[in-house]
Image (cartoon, rainbow, N blue to C red):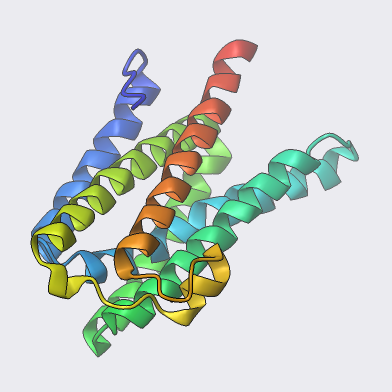
Length: 200
């Protein structure tokens, strides 16, 4: 894990992450499937916001070269969307949780948009930390399943198709695939934050 807190920007990013982690732990406790539904709703926002903003920046400047980053970030957004679709199938969220999804997305979209426009390094670093926390949560989810094998239900078809899993895949297989995605997103966003340091 990155956990480099060398700058004020890093400390702000990490502080926001830990605050949101505490909120999630308080609200969901060990209800990892329901936690995933709400958190993946939020997780699907940053890639779309940052990809869109960089796309518009390319248009404004009439410059090429932004394509790989735009595609990577929008790809992250789509990947997180598929995480959400998968866990909706698994957790079957209540009406309250569906309303919470809408509220969380509304708040986080505006927050992240402002953060990314004015402090993109901090924004990328924060998502790097977010994804590290997601890896921890999914690891805990795996541990819960290992301790309670009856929770290891059949993987939904949407997950089998998306990750090309075996037809007899179980929830554990899905979580391992999702966790690997989150680890990759963490590394990408930390690398993007590091690029600002290289330019300094």
